[in-house]
Image (cartoon, rainbow, N blue to C red; front, top):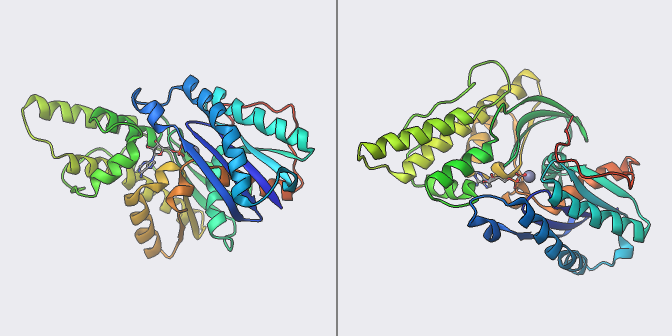
Length: 333
Ligand code: KG4
Ligand code: ZN
């Protein structure tokens, strides 16, 4: 089965062709430069840029896959959650293609796509899995009972993990997006140099809270600056990152143990974080868990994850009505 995947939920335009779990093409145009000077994604600019990039990427993806439109069995597209204007560009394109080609349209939840990325690289993997989904807009621990069947065990009650990375990075002048910049800076820092709060660490839930951490870090920096003290940027980045990673690792591994699920998937843009990957791998491995972390390019937004989720749904006989619209708050469960 050959499915084209379209992803336009935020600031990356992704188009991919996946054939039965095999990536034939996976193209992306990043809008990072466009939004960087504003310190974050400007929704209107994102929508316009998706329009500019999409036609080119569609042609290029088919070309790279060595296929023609007529070879496609379905069109999968992110229908939410995300920025409504950005989503609409992808949804309109997908509907037009599916309609003209007379093939099924499959609407995909962006977060389901992130989790399905893990199965692309590990075809032997089977649900149930515990999935930590950490991105710029979401942070949650879920149990995937079967493909497409999620139970949300806990989620952030305020900021998403990626948002915390981006906000702290912006505050210390690292630019946008902040996650990769903090990750790179932290490599040379001491994670024990400064102690920042780990909210909800031992509250017995699977929820997260990062807004207090963000406020604490910003207050701490201001106090040091007011006192004329030097701050080591590497130590600061590593110590902040450690506070975020600590809670994620502890809660996710506890979920796997309590739910008696032996496989853990770490998905979403923040899953590209090197410290999170390292600690999940070592601490999860020590508990006898199988830790699955997609390669960084499949963690951040991409079209292949949407095509992969689409193939699963199509194989189950699902079709999405052409009446579907983009839903910026689409729920996962
Ligand atoms: O999944 P994603 O590409 O887009 C959304 O669905 O939001 O995630 C983007 C987020 C951004 O906040 C970005 O700073 C963060 O993922 N991110 C990282 C890293 N790479 C991307 N955060 C920490 N460390 C990284 N290496
Ligand atoms: Zn994402």
